[in-house]
Structure formats: structure tokens, C-alpha cells
Amino acid sequence: RSYFGEVSARLQSDSYREHVKGAFFDAVADREGHVSFEDAAPLIGKCLQCAADLAQSPARPSAEEVRAEFDAHDAGGCGKLTADEFLGLMRHLQTKVAGAALALSSAMQEG
Image (cartoon, rainbow, N blue to C red; front, side, top):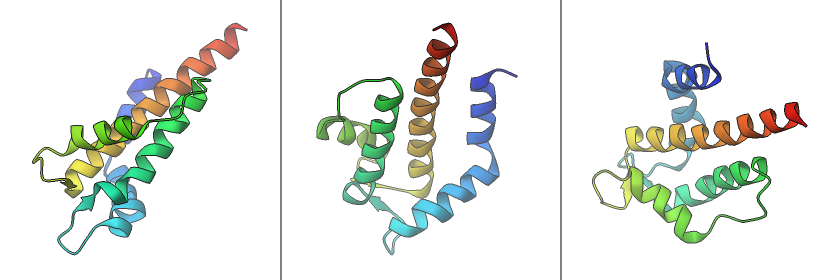
């Protein structure tokens, strides 16, 4: 199976869903079961920074980039993420990090 096939299978698994729900969503969700931008922004920023670091980019994620990632997953446009929207965001960010890690690994093997 390909690297991204393995990543995709893991991100679609019930165990990943439960991990995200237990480790992140339940910790930051409000009483209605939604995550605000303010609560999600630090995690989004860290994931984007991790991807940038793996890509050996000196750039830091901008506030606009962090906001764009959040807004792209806020399907209802209400400014808060449901559990499923939050899970989709986490899957997306993990794929970004995995892509950067794969590129770094390939570069190291070639070098």
C-alpha cells in the first residue's frame, strides 16, 4: 500500500475519529458541541507550523492562513465547527503534515 494510502486509511478509521474526539474535540467544544475559531486556532497554527518546519520553510503561518483553514471546514458558515467538521479539519491538517514529511523523507534519501 502507498504511503498516502496508509495515511488515508488511518485517518478514515474509527480509532482516529475516537482519538480526535477524545483528545481534542471534547476538550475544546462548547456546551452545544461546537468548536470556535478561537479554540481551534492554536491547534491549526501548530499543525501548519509543523508542515512548514518539515518543508524546511522559515515562514510562520499567518493569521489569515489559520483563519482560511478554519473557514474552509465551517460548512454552515456559523463560525463554529461541529464534531464532523472538526474531524474533517484534523484529517486535512494531518494530510498536510504527512505530505511535508514524505517530501522531506524523499529529499533525505536522495541526498
